[in-house]
Image (cartoon, rainbow, N blue to C red):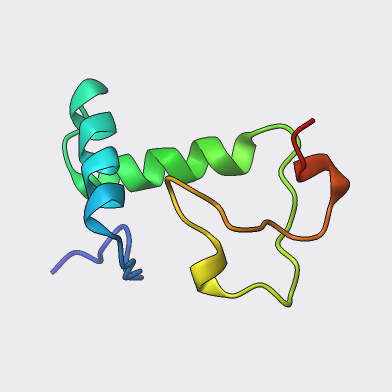
Length: 80
């Protein structure tokens, strides 16, 4: 039996609105699966210029697809 290309599993909990946004993006980009769409979004996000690591004091609930409550403590995240 062949070894899996991606042996590690990641479970992500999404709100109905977040899942709808993911599916809308996936279908618009003609991605073959939700997993492929999530991998592509992760790749794009990690490659984005200006990526800032999260502050250790942040909680999982501080981050969302549609709205972010807070992201670290950098002034670069604030909008004028």
